[in-house]
Length: 228
Image 1 (tube, rainbow, N blue to C red):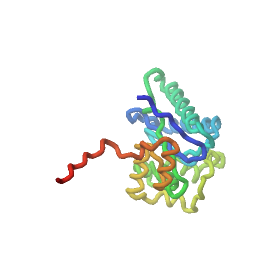
Image 2 (tube, rainbow, N blue to C red):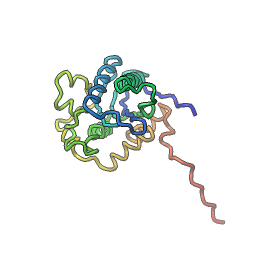
Image 3 (tube, rainbow, N blue to C red):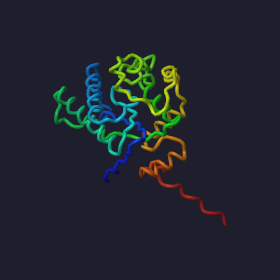
Image 4 (cartoon, rainbow, N blue to C red):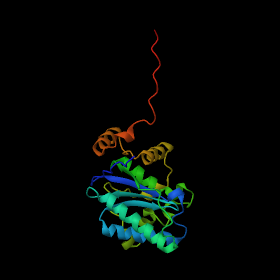
Protein backbone atom coordinates (compact mmCIF):
# COMPACT_ATOMS: atom_id res chain seq x y z
CA UNK A 1 0.00 0.00 0.00
CA UNK A 2 1.57 3.35 -1.00
CA UNK A 3 2.36 5.89 1.68
CA UNK A 4 -0.06 8.72 2.11
CA UNK A 5 1.48 12.01 0.92
CA UNK A 6 2.49 14.16 3.88
CA UNK A 7 0.85 17.61 3.86
CA UNK A 8 2.47 20.04 6.28
CA UNK A 9 1.60 23.69 5.63
CA UNK A 10 3.83 26.38 7.05
CA UNK A 11 2.56 28.37 10.01
CA UNK A 12 1.34 25.34 12.00
CA UNK A 13 3.23 23.92 14.97
CA UNK A 14 4.11 20.20 14.79
CA UNK A 15 5.18 17.59 17.30
CA UNK A 16 7.57 15.20 15.53
CA UNK A 17 9.50 12.16 16.68
CA UNK A 18 11.46 9.19 15.44
CA UNK A 19 12.85 6.01 17.01
CA UNK A 20 15.69 3.63 16.36
CA UNK A 21 14.67 0.54 14.41
CA UNK A 22 13.57 -2.22 16.82
CA UNK A 23 14.15 0.36 19.58
CA UNK A 24 17.87 0.32 18.85
CA UNK A 25 19.89 2.51 21.21
CA UNK A 26 20.85 5.48 19.06
CA UNK A 27 22.74 7.27 21.82
CA UNK A 28 24.83 5.43 24.42
CA UNK A 29 27.43 7.99 25.46
CA UNK A 30 27.75 11.76 25.64
CA UNK A 31 29.64 11.87 22.34
CA UNK A 32 26.66 10.25 20.57
CA UNK A 33 24.28 12.93 21.84
CA UNK A 34 26.78 15.68 21.04
CA UNK A 35 27.14 14.39 17.48
CA UNK A 36 23.37 14.45 17.00
CA UNK A 37 23.10 17.98 18.36
CA UNK A 38 25.80 19.10 15.91
CA UNK A 39 23.71 17.66 13.08
CA UNK A 40 20.66 19.44 14.52
CA UNK A 41 22.52 22.78 14.47
CA UNK A 42 23.55 22.20 10.85
CA UNK A 43 20.03 21.18 9.85
CA UNK A 44 18.61 24.40 11.29
CA UNK A 45 21.24 26.37 9.36
CA UNK A 46 20.32 24.53 6.13
CA UNK A 47 16.57 24.81 6.61
CA UNK A 48 15.34 27.82 8.55
CA UNK A 49 12.51 26.14 10.40
CA UNK A 50 11.92 27.13 14.03
CA UNK A 51 12.84 24.72 16.82
CA UNK A 52 10.62 25.37 19.85
CA UNK A 53 11.56 22.44 22.06
CA UNK A 54 13.21 19.03 21.89
CA UNK A 55 14.39 16.07 23.93
CA UNK A 56 16.88 13.45 22.76
CA UNK A 57 16.45 10.11 24.53
CA UNK A 58 18.56 6.92 24.32
CA UNK A 59 16.50 5.33 21.51
CA UNK A 60 14.36 8.17 20.17
CA UNK A 61 13.88 11.92 20.02
CA UNK A 62 11.03 14.43 20.13
CA UNK A 63 10.88 17.93 18.65
CA UNK A 64 8.30 20.69 18.46
CA UNK A 65 8.81 22.57 15.19
CA UNK A 66 7.22 25.61 13.62
CA UNK A 67 7.95 25.68 9.87
CA UNK A 68 7.35 28.81 7.84
CA UNK A 69 6.32 27.29 4.52
CA UNK A 70 4.83 24.21 2.88
CA UNK A 71 7.32 21.33 2.60
CA UNK A 72 9.81 22.81 5.05
CA UNK A 73 9.06 20.29 7.80
CA UNK A 74 9.78 17.29 5.56
CA UNK A 75 12.88 18.87 4.03
CA UNK A 76 14.33 19.67 7.45
CA UNK A 77 13.67 16.24 8.94
CA UNK A 78 14.83 14.38 5.84
CA UNK A 79 18.15 16.28 5.95
CA UNK A 80 18.50 15.76 9.70
CA UNK A 81 17.85 12.02 9.73
CA UNK A 82 19.79 11.27 6.53
CA UNK A 83 22.85 13.16 7.75
CA UNK A 84 22.67 11.59 11.21
CA UNK A 85 22.36 8.08 9.71
CA UNK A 86 25.34 8.60 7.39
CA UNK A 87 27.56 9.91 10.17
CA UNK A 88 26.38 7.26 12.66
CA UNK A 89 27.27 4.44 10.27
CA UNK A 90 30.59 6.08 9.37
CA UNK A 91 31.54 6.43 13.04
CA UNK A 92 30.59 2.86 14.00
CA UNK A 93 31.81 1.43 10.66
CA UNK A 94 28.44 -0.20 10.00
CA UNK A 95 27.64 1.17 6.55
CA UNK A 96 25.46 -1.18 4.53
CA UNK A 97 24.12 -3.06 7.55
CA UNK A 98 20.56 -1.77 7.35
CA UNK A 99 18.28 0.92 8.65
CA UNK A 100 18.98 3.04 11.73
CA UNK A 101 15.51 4.57 12.19
CA UNK A 102 12.25 2.62 12.28
CA UNK A 103 10.95 4.59 9.31
CA UNK A 104 10.01 8.10 8.34
CA UNK A 105 9.24 10.44 11.20
CA UNK A 106 5.86 10.63 12.94
CA UNK A 107 4.21 14.03 13.23
CA UNK A 108 0.99 15.80 14.09
CA UNK A 109 -0.05 19.48 14.13
CA UNK A 110 -0.73 21.18 17.46
CA UNK A 111 -3.17 23.98 18.20
CA UNK A 112 -1.41 27.04 19.61
CA UNK A 113 -3.44 27.37 22.79
CA UNK A 114 -3.24 25.32 26.01
CA UNK A 115 -2.66 22.25 23.85
CA UNK A 116 0.69 23.69 22.79
CA UNK A 117 1.83 23.92 26.42
CA UNK A 118 0.67 20.34 27.03
CA UNK A 119 2.79 19.02 24.15
CA UNK A 120 5.90 21.00 25.09
CA UNK A 121 5.62 19.81 28.69
CA UNK A 122 5.26 16.25 27.43
CA UNK A 123 8.43 16.62 25.35
CA UNK A 124 10.51 18.34 28.01
CA UNK A 125 9.37 15.92 30.75
CA UNK A 126 10.51 12.89 28.75
CA UNK A 127 13.68 12.07 30.68
CA UNK A 128 11.97 12.77 34.01
CA UNK A 129 9.06 10.52 33.08
CA UNK A 130 11.59 7.77 32.21
CA UNK A 131 13.30 8.23 35.61
CA UNK A 132 16.61 9.20 34.02
CA UNK A 133 16.86 12.39 36.12
CA UNK A 134 15.34 13.80 39.28
CA UNK A 135 14.54 17.16 37.68
CA UNK A 136 13.57 17.63 34.05
CA UNK A 137 16.10 20.41 33.49
CA UNK A 138 18.95 18.09 34.51
CA UNK A 139 18.66 16.12 31.26
CA UNK A 140 21.52 17.60 29.25
CA UNK A 141 20.09 16.70 25.84
CA UNK A 142 16.95 18.81 25.87
CA UNK A 143 15.65 22.30 25.22
CA UNK A 144 14.85 22.71 28.91
CA UNK A 145 18.52 22.21 29.88
CA UNK A 146 19.63 24.45 27.03
CA UNK A 147 17.23 27.18 28.16
CA UNK A 148 18.25 26.90 31.82
CA UNK A 149 22.00 26.32 31.62
CA UNK A 150 23.15 26.91 28.05
CA UNK A 151 25.33 29.74 26.82
CA UNK A 152 23.86 32.64 24.87
CA UNK A 153 24.92 30.86 21.68
CA UNK A 154 23.35 27.56 22.82
CA UNK A 155 20.06 29.27 23.67
CA UNK A 156 19.95 30.93 20.26
CA UNK A 157 19.20 27.54 18.70
CA UNK A 158 15.70 27.77 20.17
CA UNK A 159 13.10 29.99 18.53
CA UNK A 160 10.63 32.21 20.30
CA UNK A 161 7.33 30.47 21.03
CA UNK A 162 4.04 31.46 19.38
CA UNK A 163 2.65 31.86 22.93
CA UNK A 164 4.23 33.49 26.00
CA UNK A 165 6.34 31.31 28.29
CA UNK A 166 5.46 31.64 31.97
CA UNK A 167 8.14 32.74 34.43
CA UNK A 168 7.74 29.46 36.33
CA UNK A 169 7.85 27.27 33.22
CA UNK A 170 10.59 24.95 34.54
CA UNK A 171 8.66 24.33 37.75
CA UNK A 172 5.56 23.72 35.64
CA UNK A 173 7.38 21.10 33.56
CA UNK A 174 8.46 19.31 36.72
CA UNK A 175 4.89 18.98 37.96
CA UNK A 176 3.28 15.69 36.87
CA UNK A 177 0.93 15.75 33.93
CA UNK A 178 -2.43 14.08 34.38
CA UNK A 179 -2.93 10.61 32.88
CA UNK A 180 -5.55 12.15 30.58
CA UNK A 181 -3.02 14.67 29.20
CA UNK A 182 -0.39 12.00 28.61
CA UNK A 183 -2.89 9.62 27.00
CA UNK A 184 -4.18 12.38 24.71
CA UNK A 185 -0.67 13.19 23.44
CA UNK A 186 0.16 9.52 23.00
CA UNK A 187 -3.02 8.98 21.02
CA UNK A 188 -1.97 11.72 18.61
CA UNK A 189 1.48 10.11 18.36
CA UNK A 190 -0.02 6.71 17.54
CA UNK A 191 -2.58 7.97 15.07
CA UNK A 192 -0.94 11.12 13.70
CA UNK A 193 -4.09 13.10 14.38
CA UNK A 194 -4.13 16.86 15.09
CA UNK A 195 -3.88 17.75 18.78
CA UNK A 196 -6.25 20.49 19.86
CA UNK A 197 -9.83 21.40 20.67
CA UNK A 198 -12.53 19.31 18.97
CA UNK A 199 -13.51 21.95 16.42
CA UNK A 200 -9.91 22.84 15.53
CA UNK A 201 -9.00 19.18 15.32
CA UNK A 202 -11.81 18.44 12.87
CA UNK A 203 -11.09 21.49 10.69
CA UNK A 204 -7.35 20.81 10.61
CA UNK A 205 -7.79 17.12 9.85
CA UNK A 206 -10.07 18.01 6.92
CA UNK A 207 -7.62 20.65 5.64
CA UNK A 208 -4.65 18.26 5.74
CA UNK A 209 -6.44 15.15 4.54
CA UNK A 210 -6.16 13.51 7.96
CA UNK A 211 -9.86 12.75 8.53
CA UNK A 212 -8.98 9.05 8.71
CA UNK A 213 -6.88 9.65 11.86
CA UNK A 214 -10.02 10.70 13.77
CA UNK A 215 -12.09 7.66 12.84
CA UNK A 216 -12.54 4.77 15.23
CA UNK A 217 -10.37 1.80 14.32
CA UNK A 218 -11.73 -1.57 13.32
CA UNK A 219 -14.98 -2.58 11.76
CA UNK A 220 -18.17 -0.93 12.98
CA UNK A 221 -20.09 -3.00 15.48
CA UNK A 222 -22.92 -5.05 14.04
CA UNK A 223 -26.21 -3.58 15.11
CA UNK A 224 -28.66 -5.99 16.79
CA UNK A 225 -31.72 -6.99 14.88
CA UNK A 226 -34.73 -4.84 15.84
CA UNK A 227 -37.29 -6.59 18.01
CA UNK A 228 -40.41 -7.65 16.12
